[in-house]
Image (cartoon, rainbow, N blue to C red; front, side):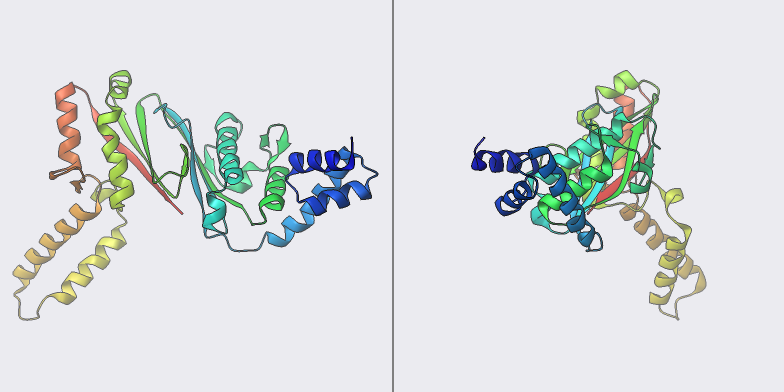
Length: 291
């Protein structure tokens, strides 16, 4: 091969710049494999310098989200929105989510510390990260991941303003338990609005029982301070109860007005579908992912 052909091959393989490729080949007697190793070693040095830089952008990446019974979500951060939309970064997010999904030896949820032994196309995750950081020039962090699977539930996911078919800055998953999974799977399109509701309205919990009691106590204190001191105690109790009920309706998934039909709340919408299909449907968990 000519020197330009070697440079092109090395550049296509590693994604490194022309100057770096020329130097790598020069340092290694035009041995492409040795040059790749040399670039990786240099990349490691570059990547290490970027490890402490802040990551405020990134994506929520879903794998197998069309199955509704078995999916994985991974949250990956980078430094800029430009890189978050970069094809190399999005491809890595897709590949990583699939690798996590397929590896049955790791925990069902965790962070980068739970992925130290993960392999991606026979390479360690650490090496893959180093290569990508070197190539795109930004710090990348795996924040968290979660696997979803149940024989008694369906999982409905939603990605808002997608960067590709699997990645976005906002995503949600709602778990709906049922006594007839096969029938419930036929209702996914109808139930999709509940996952959309979570992304759009960001409820604090499914119902009152799933909201931190301290939040309700704080809200009660705020209401009390807003009430005129001249109001009788029995009236104060009524006002507090009424305003707390309003707070719960606005901040719990089941209490919120349905985004596609505000005359219904999510609870009555779900009950209506259950009744019309003679099936049990109950929301048992929800997750909102944001960058």
